[in-house]
Length: 384
Figure (spheres, rainbow, N blue to C red):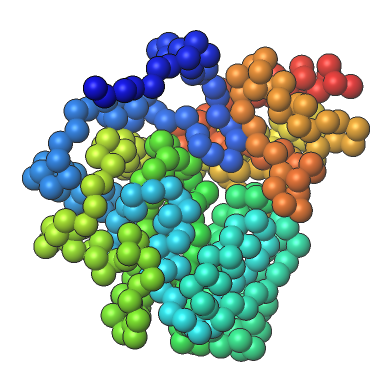
């Protein structure tokens, strides 16, 4: 007779229907999704090779090209979070011993270094203090010195709130015969991005920030120069799950089975992208800029200072200096527990020094700013 294990009383207490508090997510991500996006996730799933789903995949590709402003054929959504798309960008473009030059001015520049080193790249770095950006002259000097196969930059550094200017960088990379790979995890949908105009060869992002979708379906795009390098590889892509030579057959005309896609997350991504297209990508950029400028003004009126120079600040994420004598973790905890508002703390070199406030996607609204600042003013008054 088959024997089964019983559930003890403590475990039974956890078997009640799921109850999660409703939060206003104003941290570095995820952000709250539009109700229409959440509703789309409730649509019954179909098979990952169903004609209706394949048509939806085509729509996702077209919409991703629009929000990225590119005509790249190989533009897809990776089944995974933004870090999976980051690794896909690295895995497909790097071969062992390739010289890869990475700009490090924050936590996610360091993550690129960590990933690239695991694919046996010859990793070189240029660095700036966290919150600063690289000039064209600095990049030119670095390219002359290192002669890399790939230059990797973080367009929107999530740990610092800094926006790396990209105008002219693609031309530099072509002059020195290397690919330009960029991280747009915290910029896609909320910050101007013109991949083709700027000469970007590889870019990746996520779904849960500026696109206003739950995490788990992450955009990746490869331009013609990156595809050419991929086809010239002397070795197989070291990561089977993220191999674009295989994924392109699922997302392309062949429709060859590769893996079971997260069907309902793709429903949500398609709907989130549709909402951006309905608004207009330039209107989305302008909305994010308008609302973050309102946030900056209100914060400075409170006597709080911001970490990044105004010309390089992200409209999607703001780093606020924690005032001397204030327990930053306690403030964030009180905002969450008493006001149901999430803000992020600092990472790495900025740990304990800043709060990270995100205004991304559906959450980039004046009402979000007003609710946060009312709660923050109350909490800071109580702390002081």
